[in-house]
Amino acid sequence: MRRAWPTLAFALAAILYWFVASTILVAPEPWDSPRYPVALSVAIGLVAVASYAAPRHAGAWAVIAIVAQIPVLLTRSAPGPLLAVGLLTLAIECVPALAAAFLAARLRAVRG
Image (cartoon, rainbow, N blue to C red; front, side, top):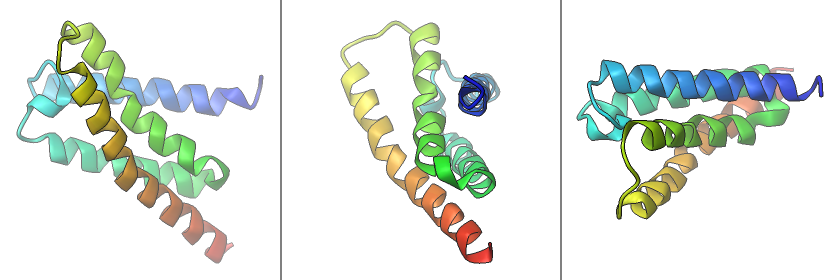
């Protein structure tokens, strides 16, 4: 159970990040704002930092940080016909997050 705490803490922090981002961006869902790419870039940067700090979980950090937008979606707006499109978009957004995570983990491995 002790090993699950960092992952749980990261997941809760990611969910909190997207709630705050959604509030700051003044959008019910973060991606409804024209400044969403900035918020997404910050999230990917945080993924890189977490992956450098804990490279064994790099893939998990990336997926958690992106998928953490789902609770915002479900609590701030009613699921509608575009839910499937939104989930597909989140899956696609995992790709750059995974790339940043694995690059950061690799950098940590090279630097020792």
